Image (tube, rainbow, N blue to C red; front, side, top):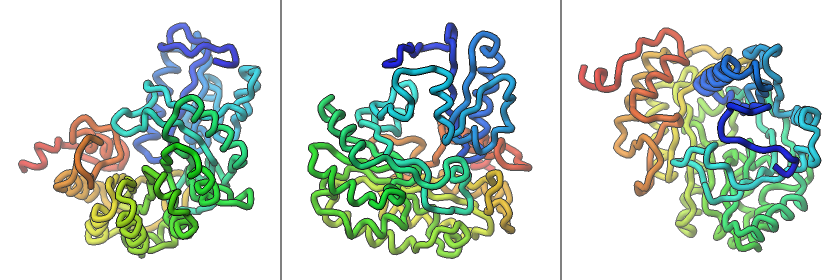
Length: 372
């Protein structure tokens, strides 16, 4: 809006329609593709459709370049050429997320969203986002502090630090996340972190000032598996038990911190025992979110042997649904809670997602499966 453009509530009457896509997994890729296809069909004749986000780089062949403009995460300067702004996109800071664009059951509606970096220093075998965003590119600490001070002046009392891996922050600048957090601690604002790779979490934790830990309200540390064998296949060099020990130590002193984690189930060659062991995460984390594994384009995990049959993925999903702490959505339940990382209104929705994302799926409703 500072550039003289008006954001309107409906696509009718728009000159430009900007669609941010996600290529994290097959479910989100298909949903993104469906949304883009619908908008092309309805509006491409009267508006310029711009497709951005990770999927624009992960799988650009999905989109007809004669009908859309494709802008990958490392091509944001294209927006400057299209809109000829007074303020270039790279100079636009964070802010409160528009309520229309956030899952109210999950997001932090009152937080100031501050992106501290893009990309990461990791090389997870299953991740296509790394290929889309590349190595870490961090904002200068001085710039972040200016943005933070402006947010506080505007009345914000909590900040959400965003990054593909906040733990990678500063590796390209000769600094690190602990230094940044230990600076932010002196401001009257709660700190939320989404996400931090467990390996970086291990190395940065001893560097955090006690006052910093008092300021932290939320942290997502995605362990992805509790099996060291599976973590090795994922190219994630840490032991989940070491992460559990750190979480336990922090929680013994700072009970207010809400810890969340992610688990990928059905990774190639994962045994039923390795899958079930992952529920131990609920003994340490306040929220454990499960995602079923899907192959992504041009990543090494897609070439691994021992792919888990879709029928077994369905069975493991039922195990998650039957967990005593399972909840279909974030709510006011006392933690820990176990969730699935998908937009669900009913339990059938997850089985439809699996049926659409994985080969050779015969979908039957959860109620039918449970009663059979």
